[in-house]
Length: 297
Image (cartoon, rainbow, N blue to C red; front, side, top):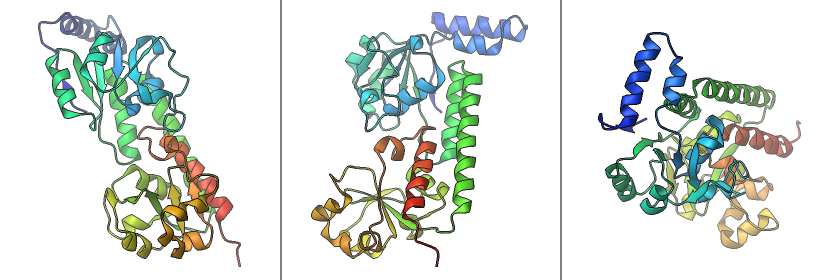
């Protein structure tokens, strides 16, 4: 996880050096030193950062979160941050206006914004580009150490492992291993994505990955239909009934998923999150698959 280093002449840097000397001497716990790096006003500029902060630190240490934190479709932390905490977009003025001493930025934040932020002198932590549950666990532990929340991060990682173990046990009891295609407005999720990790953890096969597709890729409708998934996995609302999907994409009617009525809708907060909340998406998908599984012959 890259960090934009602090200048060695800043008060925060001097506090760290003094604290580390005290920790080496056994005078204070190392976690107390790490928590006192000046990161008392942390600002997040992405939903991933919002969710990680909610898991790792108290709201009193948060200066601002992204505007997406309050979106019930996208966010797993709606209602967690009080109104007194600023809501910002990834732009330099509102972020600096919250007077942060540490800013969490995501790899997908605007490069110009990240450059201006680095030049401002504020310390910056760049979140990792996670692609699977191992990446998610590693990011939690790394950020926990950075924020002086090592024990809390360890507990979050343990809960993640427990949820995944439960998911694997459920999947092992289900004999049906359907071929699933994650579809969002013509874009499919192939290998090397968190959606792929979710599908595989649910004991299913990612149709796009099986076809050699990597990353999030837009496919022509003919190629998409040729994948012929048994289940369509959607992360957007199709209206009152999943069948309304056919109004926009009539070619999908020829797939096994549509013919057999096996369309699963998960809210984006369960399907597209890149934090430990993704494990909830695995369990939700398994619940839907259990209801759609064909009767044993």
